[in-house]
Length: 239
Ligand SMILES: C[S@@+](CC[C@H](N)C(=O)[O-])C[C@H]1O[C@@H](n2cnc3c(N)ncnc32)[C@H](O)[C@@H]1O
Image (spheres, protein in one colour):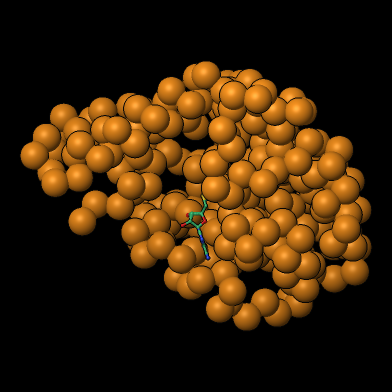
């Protein structure tokens, strides 16, 4: 059976509303160099890891639960000839040793059941005053419009409240790389394009109608609400 994310993220290099330039900037802000070893949890198809390893020459340990995404990541690593180890595992089952120079979780804090446990888990990976970077949504507007329906998992806060939530985990947010509308439009509208292509190629798939409806719902919600209401940023913290 086709997996929704495998279908709609078929064209994504980076599976978040960000850009290659911003991932490079992340590497700079983290002070990464060729001798750095980075942990990347919820690494998806390896987009950020391969980019950082290729451009900086650092070593990365990636942890990804989905076998489909882990397989794509391994292929990208092989093609790029970079030092990225892809571990196929649930984040919670991966034993985090304190051996890394920086730890990332870009758009996967749900893997640890929330932001605070994510920051606490990543902090165990790095030395004192080490860097932890987490990509997380926040609400640009508060209160949310009365007719906007919050969906499951969207227990986000405003930007200042999100920083407070980070800092309640015992770290200091020292810098921020926020997404633009361009970043959001690339991330969201590549879903539309990939889905349209998949539906054209698989019109008789038993899931075609369900996927078409799901795609319409997401596109409509993005255009009506999410584009204006939701922000996303990589929050870079010192432990
Ligand atoms: C929004 S994607 C981000 C991927 C990647 N960090 C990027 O920026 O391109 C979130 C990823 O987290 C993975 N994920 C979800 N739950 C997980 C878990 N419990 N353990 C490990 N990975 C998980 C998903 O399969 C997906 O690849």
